[in-house]
Image (cartoon, rainbow, N blue to C red; front, side, top):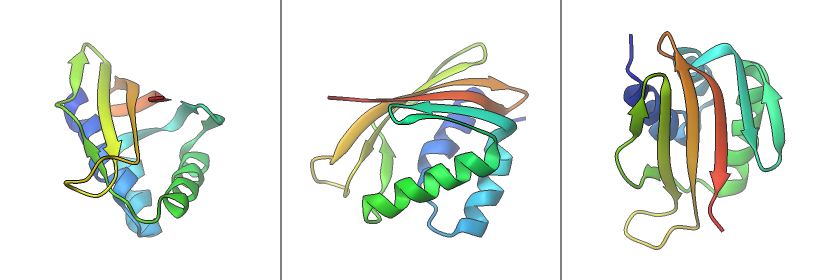
Length: 117
């Protein structure tokens, strides 16, 4: 079973960077619980299909810019915090933020995305 750090690292570096919808669906199934509840400043979605649609919408709006971790994932029992940046490597990021996630049995059950000002 994946650790909290492994799951959140996969979320940022693989799920949110995967352009291929079929491969992204496989990554979502390996990373998030079937009833994932995802909160961001635009609202809340529930379930893998709604979450996948949300990510597809996000990726369509980023122009293919990659997400990267700004520092190692912080974790405690069942809780993880991943600080990320969006933008080309070696250049100032276009956006930064933090994902806070609850993890049970190696899958993210609830995740909040907070955007930096």
